[in-house]
Amino acid sequence: MDQPSTWIKREFEGILENVQRLGPFKVLLILGPRQVGKSSILLRSAATDAQYINLDDLETRIRAERDPILFSKDFTAPIIVDEIQYAPQLLSPIKVLADKTDKKLCIWLTGSQSFQVMKGVKESLAGRVLILNLFGLSLAERANSAFSSIENFFKEVFIGSFPALRESDPDIWSRYLSSYTTTYIERDVAELLGIQKRREFEIFLKLCALRTGQLVNYDEMGRDAGVSAKTAKDWLGILEDSFVLKLVHPYHSNRSKRLIKTPKMYFLDTGLCSYLAGWRDPEQLRLSPFAGAIFETAIFCEITRCLSNRAKDFQIFYWRTKDGEEIDFLVETNGKIVPIEAKIGTVNTRSLCELENIADKNWSNGTVVSLTRLNQGIISATTEWNIASPEHIYELIR
Image (cartoon, helix red, strand yellow):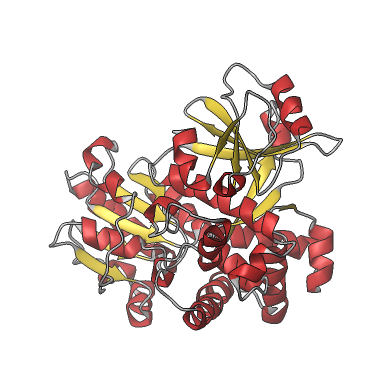
């Protein structure tokens, strides 16, 4: 597989450069969306003599499915197996190979569908595999990581985080995301999970994009897509397992209650979300009623990328009272909770004060991530809350 002619240095590479510190694992599994650079990073970081098996190639996949034992008889470490979800039958031979070698992290796998992969991993590779997530380019990895204006920031949000789109013009952007939707999302979901209602699923995907940053209503989404609420819930789970979006649950000190309350939904790439929602110009997006939701989504994506790129164990929640007071994100990592509020404009200080009243001793001071600083505007907040620009997110949660 050819690597891109212009390599974008990824923060994630820092993890692979220190594999000896990752633990006593033989197998490394990198999960994440399609086209974010999983294969390229492994090919760049793995030993030069590593075997490379690409299961995205149909002929290779058929041979692996037909006779996984025969297909894998010549496997030797080091080895890279790309898109393992297409042939989970290979996980048993990979287990045998892992048990034969004394080398650490010499078997490298990638996957773009967590449910299919994790089911096989739990059965075959328990105790042998380190699992990491890779997402698109963070703000720090992009060419314009320091934003001179709100307009500049929305151009980045509009383009999104796929490495292939860094230097693209609007026509290429539209064609790429159209192909990505048809080839990877709709095809992968249909092939792996047997969805028959292709037209309804296409509508459902666009409805999800229009609802990024909102509370999930399965009845409403199912009705609008022409399917049942149960189907809508199942499809949303599929999109989450395919790294298209992420469900964020409300924070509650009783952990079991977090799982039964209504989640919020965020896309994992703002460019794909903008495309599916029907926006074709960054300035129109900035001036639209959708701007607040896409900004909040961008901050969620950046938190996720920053922590994943450093192999951090974390969870993200939201906080909301019965009266509708809300804090966008409570980031739980390193034994502490960091409140983060994402706002383009001024902040409702009542929400901030309410949160301070319930904060525990392991809660850090909160931060308002805002674009107003770019225009030297004034944002209202209590003295316990810091103000930061989007590109400084990792400094808040390290």
